[in-house]
Length: 281
Image 1 (cartoon, helix red, strand yellow):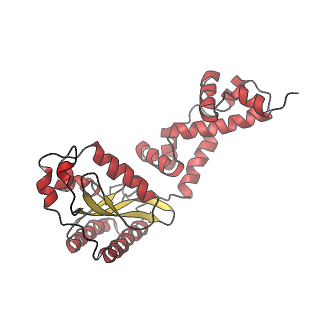
Image 2 (cartoon, helix red, strand yellow):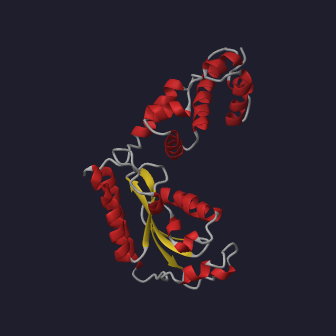
Image 3 (cartoon, rainbow, N blue to C red):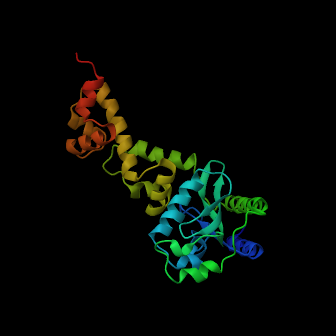
């Protein structure tokens, strides 16, 4: 598929929207979907629920917490399509975008309104919300199984095509291995940095930060401290080096900072850890 054919994604999404009579949102949580030239495949309106008037009216931090954070967590733990109803009574079908064990993001289909939902009683909903909400089609359970099968098949096509055109960089295990290799080589150096890791991965700092949280479960600093303290424990148990020397050998600028981080991770200062695990001579 040539570069110009990346428009296939948008054409396909618009065609499916016409078939279903609802909108589609593709959320690229990790900033993974790019053309070979570095362009974003799914533009901002395609990734935002605010293109829907019912979502744009009364949009708040509660919307971000639900759609971006809560749904992202739910999607990362599931394989197939599932139904979600947000705090404003807006219903959508959510389909995780994943390839095998790699979780990429979400594709959502909607919106519908929940039958019998009393939006008037919801705190924080503005007066203009009602007319947009009442204009939505009502979600019906009849035919839901067939609809779920259809959107799952469509989403698998999106995933397969993203992989076909190399729109997604390698993740597990390759990307995680690259990340851990960087920490293995650089953890003891004062020069270790998020920028350095980003350069080694050939990614931006923001994209690298998102990748770290997705694949390794933490920020750059948290992961760097974890690797350094793991090495420090080995030195504490296998040498008689003073704490200042252990701190310097594992990349900390001074003994105080080393002791503070060590205590935070292990629940005790390094000296107490050594006395607990090393028998007295």
